[in-house]
Image (cartoon, rainbow, N blue to C red; front, side, top):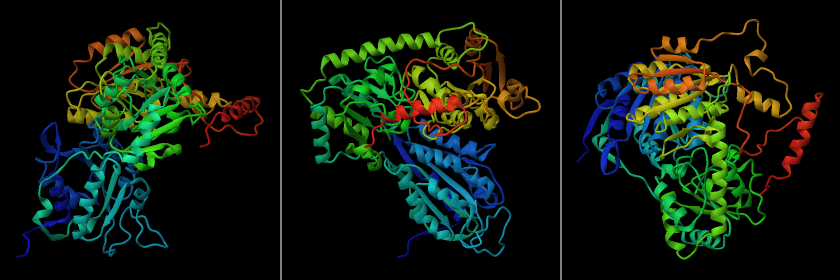
Length: 615
């Protein structure tokens, strides 16, 4: 007997398949796709557009303003959902598709799932070259969408309608696999979207995807446990994998049982609440003095769910113990083996639970734990000083952070690029898993507002506060309109320091002259007097411009009950940053220069390089 089939266009098959993919969260079966963002054009409006209309009551379609923005929002949705749910995005061919490439790279670096469905040229090639087609004189198969290949975990170009069957199955495997997880791009030729095929009904059977938790290998586990049993000064570095594995309780249990201090990466911040006695806060370049002083002495680092990027390791100059051993507890072998670590390839929760049981009887020396707790107290005093209210004409980023924290202490804080991530990593007091949402793997300017929209769609009951600098705001602000349109209320605190203050400070620190970062230092005829409050209001937001920290705090309190997105603007000082904490970061300084400031910076740089670990 031949299998039952249903005749659909390829685009209709995609739409129906997506509606049948489910996940289980806390015992409840629900759609794994939270929706699909779409900006239609000639490469997807007739095919995917018509198909999505047919399922609009099952899988919501969201209209965005910018393709990169909507893909950023989709990535943020997945991050806020701890990778248990995610979204899809569809665009036309050409510029619409390529606008998503940056977001694909963001998702790739951060190991976050998103399904990208850009339109493509005609598979039959008869109308070539079509509008927006990129032609390669030496390869007739190349299209603009080939740009997605290096930033996709899985890429496929659909040139026949039946090809979508294995492609979508493979896509779901990647999107839901804890080790392979990342962006999937299915490039949909526009003529094939409209072609019909007799699809097997079994292709549309409901499928429930559950979190896979790989257990550790026995030999790897024995080596890791032995290293910990011999440790005198161990620390845990908690990365984003702790949150994605929902291993916060396992982390707490392990740390408390054995007295091991916990240091947090940007992605791992909020793994433990800020007020937990063993949470030393941020580590690395933007680390607290409490974390970094421990990292310098540590003889064993249990790195859980982190890819150990340079901001975490102080460009591999932070760890100074000659006998250092790193245990790479990571579901992805590529990350678990970094820097000659003892690999422990496993799910973070499963690995921590297993270690918790295996180390019974072991205990960290009390002097090490006491040293950690004393260091935290010292740090908290410095942090409170940095975030205290000020009457300065131009407050610092840290002082703005203090006001936001006091007024909205239970908010989910969203940020991405510039100087704010460093200050927030040190100073924001996260009180629960996921309450700190930072995109710093790719440090994508323009992510903040779109990311806030994605977080709000994933966590509609939460108070979502976005902090963004004027530079990032100017790069991408259009999803303010989307948030208003969708009733996804955000509170956006816009810090205006009249330029790229963070990079200006880095320029100065490496001996460079103030050049082309702050607006006043650019080549200009007239400096723009940008009224950010008026600009945001034009997109439908409620807005305020405040002139002091006290006014900001009041405004945050008074606008919490607003019924739609609110933007609060405050002018800030571009030069002030928190001196306490932190660590050297490897930014290459020119070896030869006519400027003495650069030569002095080069000498300091050469000295700093000596602390880097080569292996």
